[in-house]
Length: 234
Image (cartoon, rainbow, N blue to C red; front, side, top):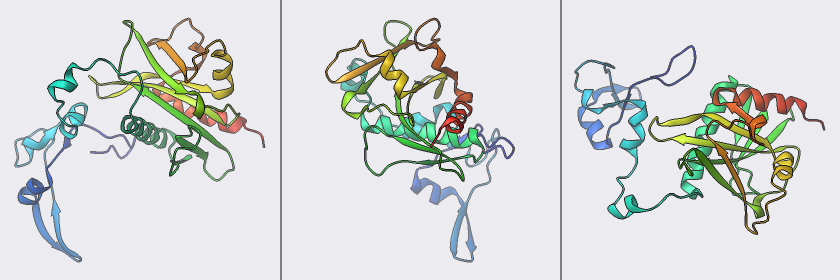
């Protein structure tokens, strides 16, 4: 369900295996053939109630059940390609919602120098490329850590890095994000000499450290990027 005023998705959701949906959904004849449809209560006990789930549990229905071997694995500090794509899509959807149509967003057909998402101010030449990094893991008690590959990192005025924590328990991005211009990221990590990666590490609250000026409430990320877009010069 979507709130028509805010555009935000609301609880609950309904999740159906395709064969089950075809069996229990209502059927009518439309101008182009059969149409399946649902009239469901968000709280009541109707024929669709058993397929109703809270939004925060939606990922449990759609994700595979981990095997015993997978459950025993330790934390992973570097995202897989599939995980990275998930973070990119989550961020893109949130930026579209927050910008209220002021942003046009594009994903490249292939990985180009770490540019995961292109954010354009609609009806203008102004664009910023984002490299998006996310993690679900907490290390050393209160910290999150993301690794940036050196071979994908070439600082420029229109290139930013965006870091996120995804709270698996809440089923949502954490309350803060870190949006860092690539030139400033290069300056703040100049003392790192790892040959393959650059390490971004910060506490979840992110107080009193070098990254504090770049910490923003998750609901402000579109506002921060819009200011950056407007500040660009040809």
